[in-house]
Image (tube, rainbow, N blue to C red; front, side, top):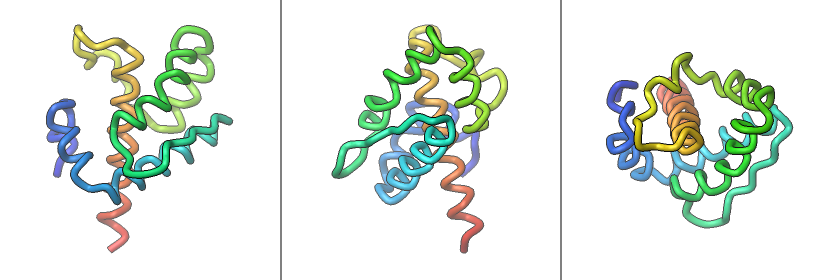
Length: 119
């Protein structure tokens, strides 16, 4: 699976949702990276979904986008989002929703890389 195959949301979501174990590891990675910036994320118990992760992250990221750009830069640096992530945003998607997608996608890729090289 290449990064290119996960570049579009409609291709990413089925791959992401297909493996609950990887969704849980992605959630843990997101919590770990947000904690490095001093932000505690608590995801609901039970089977995690993209929408559940988005629901928890969205208020924080909206706040950072519009009120705390330094915190946003810290999160982007810690998570290691690719430069130019904003330029790939589809016109019909709000910036904060696209940022959530980019973060989940990046953290998922980290999990996949760890899985691949831990064998």
